Image 1: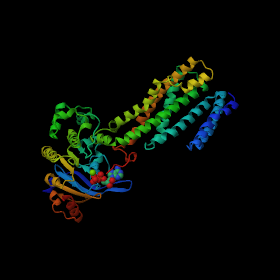
Image 2 (image 1 turned 30 degrees about the vertical axis):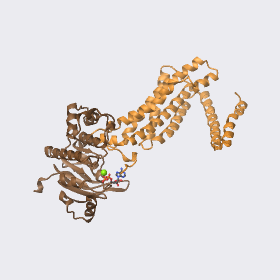
Image 3 (image 1 turned 180 degrees about the horizontal axis):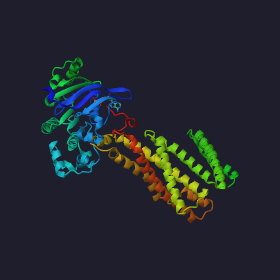
Image 4 (image 1 turned 120 degrees about the vertical axis):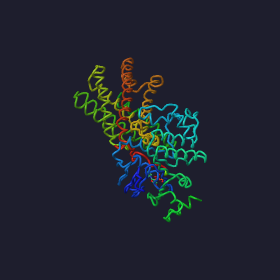
Length: 243
Length: 256
Ligand SMILES: Nc1ncnc2c1ncn2[C@@H]1O[C@H](COP(=O)(O)OP(=O)(O)O)[C@@H](O)[C@H]1O
Ligand SMILES: [Mg+2]
């Protein structure tokens, strides 16, 4: 049965360090195609770094990463980053309007985003059309996060990397974004890798989960591992988080 | 003016030293060093220039220009140490500017091909280019640092390094050129430019002095724009590697 599941992203003994400091240590695991995998773990565990390795913003010091069966270095960087989309917690923006930010992925290819498409994108993330011409600097943290998610979807990535994208959202917005991501996952069979601090979120939306600490994946499997972890450190971490 | 008169003019050095002592500014040492250095350096340059003018040998002219470029490069490169190969990038920019300006000046016979013209004009062009290079590098490294999130964003959306750095590059080119343009708007209203004053004092016809000053101003506009633009386009590629990743050694580590 498990043979049917192909890895969308496959890590093989991957190490990443900066100036002698090991940030990721010997990561060997895979993210399955068309599935939602959540990444949990304390801050500083290396989760964000792992996402940046997946879309080639960083390269490992040793080991190999395969994207859809092809070694990552065989992709052109631009092609890879359109295939593997990334939305960061910090939701960085370029100066200008919401529309300018939404149009950015296409503008980089010399293409245009129609106002209609832009409105639909806003609608998907739960923002009204009137936001289109607002300057980014007038947006709240939560609204910026929504624009950032919508912008990542413009390239229609087959693999979607999400870094704590609901951390500054209220409960209702959080629910809307979860529904949207699950819908995208079902409709386009998009592979989702989702970093979250919210264990409830990991349990409800994730098919699989990885628990990371100190640059290592110390436990991974189907999401119910978050209910009944084997590793002692994971038990302690989960207890602290649940409370 | 005789050396005797010049020595009497040292009164103008004694005044700030006395003032520094009375007010406890602690600037006496630096003032004396500055005075001694300027006396030695300028006298040396004066004698070298006299020798070069007298000999009228192209080799000496080229040698002096080379020394100017090396000195200016040494000075400007310090502001861009995080950029790989900054030394030759600054040097090549200065060489191109010097070659371009002199070929226009000499090619159209705007100035005569003598050391008396080539050397001072080269000095002004190279000196100004150095200041522009410093202004540009200061601003560019600061822009890259403060906007690294945007750069990474554009890369992550499938943009090229050139697209990712464009705003920072253009802002830096523009802002380093502005002082040159602005200072020319008010020139002559408040302060006579140094070169022009010097010529007038030395007995030149004021209109001639003005013509020369205008020539220099035009030159400096070209110098400013080419220095910033050329250095910018030479510099930005070394912030990235072949995999279109931003090189972290150019940046401070992120906050966690
Ligand atoms: N460019 C960098 N230079 C130095 N240290 C870094 C750099 N990027 C990340 N780190 C370090 O790597 C570790 C993991 O960071 P990160 O991947 O952001 O963790 P997480 O997302 O799990 O909180 C942290 O200790 C952080 O300080
Ligand atoms: Mg993180």
